[in-house]
View 1: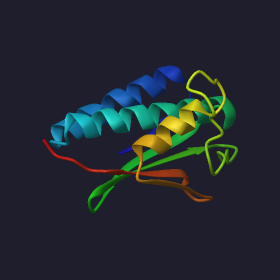
View 2: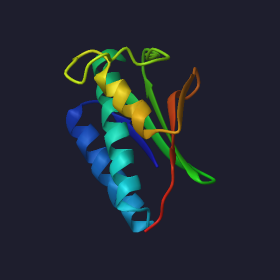
View 3: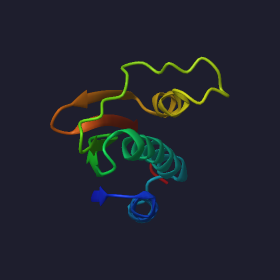
Length: 121
């Protein structure tokens, strides 16, 4: 799945389409929820800090789903979440992302990449 996102309305549309497709492909509700949460956090951050536009890609890779989010200015999040408190405004989204993913990295070509374990219903 490939999406180009330029605002929060496009973000909502992309998340809705992604969840519809994942559900139709019989991914578990847990997997669909986790993908939606992670994508929402990453895309919101890229829209805010990454130049206002994002490219979003979702692909199955073996037993994982790979989500890639790239902003137009090459926004790169910190390697580790700086969240020290659940009520903190800074770093909480990245903390959530890291909590739901198997791993996260960054490449210049694909941007932020996260990998989620796949479960089927």
